[in-house]
Image 1 (cartoon, rainbow, N blue to C red):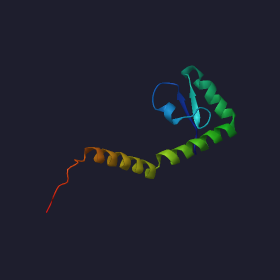
Image 2 (cartoon, rainbow, N blue to C red):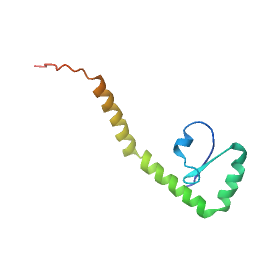
Image 3 (tube, helix red, strand yellow):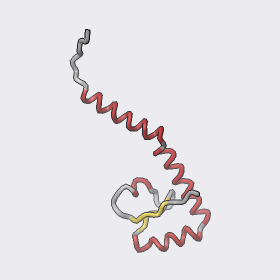
Image 4 (tube, rainbow, N blue to C red):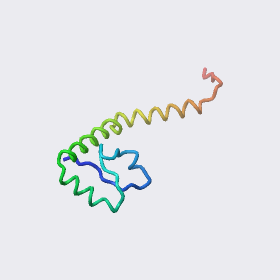
Length: 90
């Protein structure tokens, strides 16, 4: 079972992950009950958001994507810290 994310509109990572009403809901804490009831009453909307949330996770946070991203970071750091002079190891 997949479900959309409902989160408060606080500063932090959730706003980077959730696109309001596309793959989840971002709302003030005093509106959380209203949003939950909306999703409970609107099956198609809930399923659409859940599907989009799942696609976002697979696209942006799959093992392959994360490993590739970390490898790019490590390679970039190694290039920055590599000395310019050539060493002779013979």
